[in-house]
Length: 215
Image (cartoon, rainbow, N blue to C red; front, top):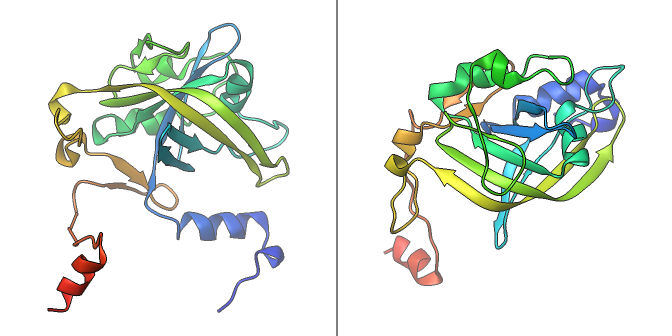
């Protein structure tokens, strides 16, 4: 079956994408408004972009009418900084709760019981309970569409990273997956523990590696 996105309504497009583009990493984004009131919200349109400079992106979508922009987007437009806190199994209930539609200015930190900690280089606080946090300055905000089902791409340059010492190999800078226990989003209300069912494949980095495969 071939689907033509132009013939599908918004809900159908969303349902198809959310049930096929997965698992999706979760950016638990903390921001502040112009009055330094904190906001904390999860985003699963999220990915690393590159490492030179270290760059990440997340994508706020258009919220239900009559609101045009989410608080997170309004905040980064006003104060162009944010923190991506990595969503781990230990705090996934709080991550899920922080998606609740609080009125503007009310703190998801207070709602979830998470602890705001001052960041070192940006105004928004990070989540103390998160094992990894990326402090970011906004590089660009790209509007894809402000229509229902549309959204924006927020690109951020990472200016500082916080990581639990127990997770980090100080030589390779690999973070231990089994200790971090990151959580991914599936369709609907389903999530996955990314450390619970893993397997390893050989990566072929050169033509010689590829040739050796057939020997």
